[in-house]
Image (cartoon, rainbow, N blue to C red):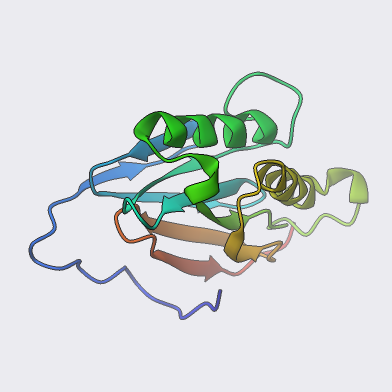
Length: 166
């Protein structure tokens, strides 16, 4: 996905009334009604799932790849986002995914601290385990990302924030 340097996403069509939700690490939102979801990512990752037939979707925001049973853990967060979409009426076979984040905003040289890359790998692995295609991604960048996701269109806007270094 190409960074276009937007300031804010354009206003949706006048006939669309939507809610807004800001996601923080550990949040999962999936809804049938229009919601513009937003978050800020560094090494964290967000997976956006969209059902193009039903025209609804959801998003998560996770902090670390795995190791627990809360939504800050990528394996758990992706599984539960898929589960919530299924509860809404969208089985995994109907979904498309977009992945964002997994950057290295602090430019740490030590590979032990490559949590961003590990987060991206877990997201890809979990989506592959459900056979959900990844149709777009903006991952493993040098700075932070500001992300907006319209769950009724599947559209995502991304703004890259340059890293200041450690």
